Length: 272
Length: 347
Image (cartoon, rainbow over all chains, first blue to last red; front, side, top):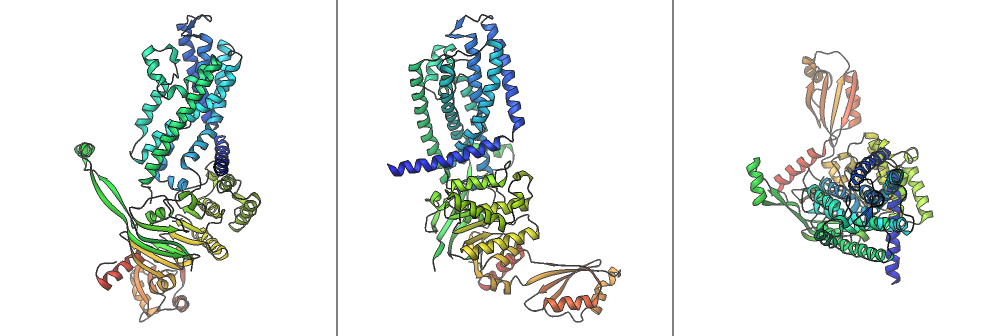
């Protein structure tokens, strides 16, 4: 027991060191921050106009249980998670292709763990910036979010959502051990996350059969659940959402570990 | 003597997809792919003692980097066994990482937008170094590698030479028992190369770090290593002390002399023969004459460099003079030829 605790504690300290250095490196990409924030503002403006037309400007009307104000804040919450994630799949593919993976594999640190630390270090900083930028636009256009536990619950759920996004993208990136190009797979994954994850339309507004399909997929746990609880808090739902996220994290972690283990055995490092 | 690493019949074969040219070939390879087996490393036996400095040499595609990658646990072999610092690399990769250091000349471990001091800090955390010991060690390496002015400069602003010094210093932070260097001096100028060799030698002397390197630079082998292993077509061709190799093969130099006098290039050959030496001293061959430039092939085992230079400067006014080592490719070609004539196909 003590040995396991010691191992986890050491691994945690190493991860934290990676998070810290990734966070520092992220400061170098100020233009990237600015561009992402501008893109988010543009997206929110266009989508706000669309939803404004759908609600006919009526702030009291509810569609699928969401008012116009809730939908706009929902969009801020899902977009902040989606746009915060660094392109970890492309990075892994690149490392496998050009042989840089060699440098990572000769360190006493898990390869996937390193990328997770780096992803969270970069992702969390971007997430905060995007949340603040998007939140300001939403506040100015539809008013503040519903006060209460929602926004507080959203933050830890969003972190778990980022973890889920990482695991899904890493699983695709690690396919580079077998296939020469993973961009196609990543494109499919991204579009599935956008639709089945409820990025632009809350799942409650989708046809019932689609809602049933989405319930069996991990995408909604990454985006829809944190955002919905952020705008429409429910104590019991929070517990269910959290359990679902943790269950998907456990399942996807096993999948990623399996892919990595199998892939590392047949790795052909390029570049000399 | 304690062994640093040992391999027995270590081999690696890859399956390579073969594609025919054109769209038809691409379609055919999509539905009925054809695979060819390529042997990168052919059952090699190596044994390196602790504290040794060994160069693994060979032309491109000989299997040097693949061997290093198997010994560091990155690649899994398809045949044979190996132990490095008492561990099986591909089975105990993480444990082994604490005992070895690696420098891959073309790949960087430094964070591009951050100063090296940040990467050093990360390495100290990853290798779980004691804070006080780490600070002392870092300061010592910074002093020895003369990194003071660069430690707080973003890596992207460092020259290749400065970056490589940081890379190698970083790989020494956790006091590795064995240091694997894959082309550590590639692309560096003579001064930086020499400095890097000197410091690696110093670490080897002071901490008995075993050094295992691959290089295309004969200078790395001559100045850094006590033993050279030449591999070709994935198998060991020659395993010999560098001192012996130096006597036999590294003694060949090329001297290029540019004459200061405005001699008629056409008559330089005649002039050279008349005024410099007649006949040509033993161990010296006239390789080429290009205008006012004369290239001489020298065998230091048979002629004395001091006497040679003295006689040259006496014979003519010299505008420029360079002495070059033979390229490693030339040496390997030579070895390959030697082995062939010795007993048919090389082993």
